[in-house]
Image 1 (tube, rainbow, N blue to C red):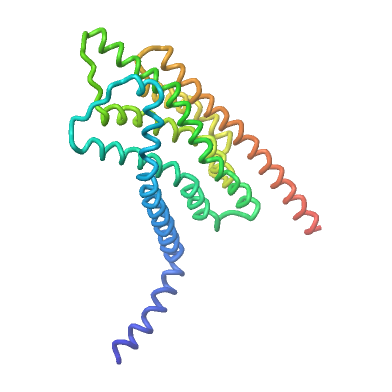
Image 2 (cartoon, rainbow, N blue to C red; image 1 turned 180 degrees about the horizontal axis):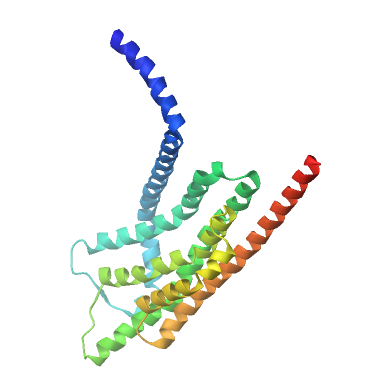
Length: 271
């Protein structure tokens, strides 16, 4: 009984001490973050299961388009068919979970936001999926054909016999599609960070040179080594950054106007 009483009296003391030292808020934030991550992983698992059912129709659709339609595909392993299913399921799960992931990130930072900021940032969530789909279309119909035809031209110049493995083909394709599609979320990310006052257009303009370098580097990496292909990818990415700066400036102006109005109201109440 004595040990239980000591424990009962020790626990409230420890919690109070943690609060006084400022550690409890940190532990509460970590617990909240862990809960949000768990929810996201759970939805990804559900999306993966759903993706397994949608994988075959998605595969048939891709195979009905160029360049896959005109290519004889081969399998080099008994597991290649399973691998293709899993690749499509993962991409479909990613598409399904993007809005939910955006909501979980919003819910995590929500307690630190004012009511107006909460409403302003919540409306970005539906556009997360839209921007990803736009990026997916751009990368598939513009970037992927450039990279694909370049590699085929190199093979032809070396007199190589092309044998397309199904896993190699889709790995090559998704390695281009997914990074570029995620980059199309940049305007929303910057708008969100501006709305919660982490970023502003002044900082973004100062980071312009570094950002341009990163965009050009990405354009060079994911496309064939020629100026035209690099420019076709780098210029839209730079345009995305400039659009992000413009949208950030619009939000920042509204914030300054709201702050000025709030200050004037406080001055009137004080007088």
